[in-house]
Image 1 (spheres, rainbow, N blue to C red):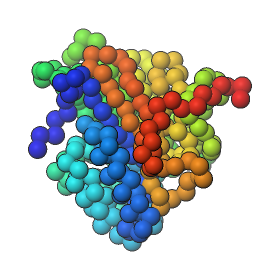
Image 2 (tube, rainbow, N blue to C red):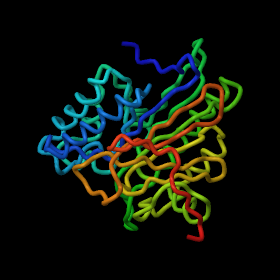
Image 3 (cartoon, helix red, strand yellow):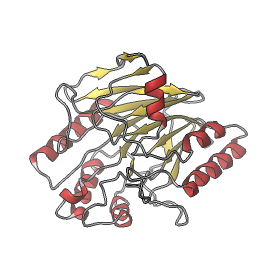
Image 4 (cartoon, rainbow, N blue to C red):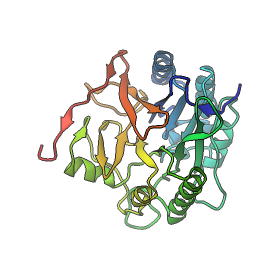
Length: 308
């Protein structure tokens, strides 16, 4: 099967984002996660499936290689191109990021890439989406390894390293120069940027926030780089299992996915699910909604005002 991504004849391209699956060893809770992902994929019929980190529980896996192969088996059976980024838990067990990347790369429909060796992290790469009726590029999807934990003594989660941000800026400039204008783009990573706190605290948002935004304590400037490049329309993260809000900050929509996995923490009344994203060819806009475990589709999330 050709894994080249292309807009449909009707000018749409649909993505399903599964996040925080936290697969362990195939326990009953894992099988619930498998059934949910299969159910949503069958209902949505996406053009691409994206896993935004904490695919594995890390230390909860007896054999992380085997656990990842099980996840690969699950997504491969759908016959749809898929890709992924790592979270902070994936490599806490018996396999490194490089080893897990190699396992994911075994899939016939896998589009994962380890990325340039000189760039920190494993899984910094760009996927392109072709126009529907020709081979010209129409949109970009950036995937960035947001790391795990801070290397400095201030603690907390890792921040994007300067070399990663420089890599993004070079890639954006390269594609912009080739197209003579910034191409519509989305970015996927696991750990939210500090700007997720800002958008919730200072702007109208849509969705729910039931825990702190667990962003890095330092802001290393990826959002500023994206704003200056002018291509990224929206970012999609996971990490915080009971947050699912999105908000617009200076023209970029900062979006949480909807936590998918059952073998990890959640919240009563906050069902598992996935975020769906639909791009429109030739347009700098996208639509996004939630698809939940009971089959319901949530297109209008509750509105949150900064004063609340």
